[in-house]
Image (cartoon, rainbow, N blue to C red):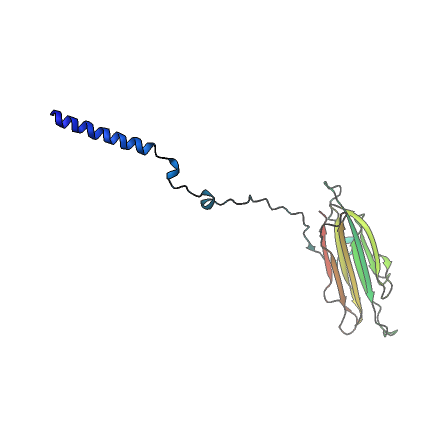
Length: 207
């Protein structure tokens, strides 16, 4: 290798070194910045789905008093207090004659002692603890706690034009929670004494 070729190689090496040094010293701000907020937009952390809403279940509206089995749970913790109001009535038209069959309507509910209580239009109905007055609403309120059972049965037989109503309203102690309330108001519209068309029975356990 002659001295001219050697000088040329040294010159090219020096130029390459300068170019490399210039690239390494280039300001980082000159390179395009990725918008990571657009590439990976922030998302809200998903919260677990929790619910303490009671599940309403269907029961047997023809259940006899001695067939009733309490479904509640006593001493549940944490515990909350609820005000429960029962309303009931049966209806008969004023033009019912002495030959008309007596109305045999009833409503049943579970009280604070876990017992199935019967209000009816006649003492002849099994388990009757209170006889309703014709065309007058009867009401009672009491306290239940978490784990207790809420239940309403509305059923019975009557002449055409008669009817029955039963209702349960439930409120928590703070009046903030919406809980299932039941209402069944039915009239018998068939000839002769007949059962109401849609006997009612629903229940749930208080959260």
